[in-house]
Length: 85
Image: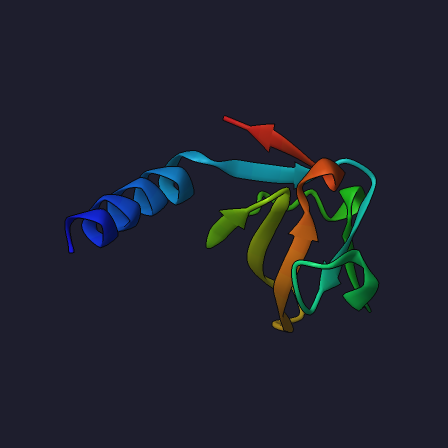
């Protein structure tokens, strides 16, 4: 129980502190696996600041809503993102 509580606190701290922007182009993935790449992506021209819901093993889970109101959810490769403060 204490271990789960520590993980929840750490996860909350990570998601409150971490923000990302896209380097060039970042595709959404269905799973934490590069082979599950989808057609949906965000490019640097969107100038979006992304708040991760979860981070794990070089992947970041993002929920992004564009200017047209379309929401995309999924994993992205962390190496395709730049951490901003």
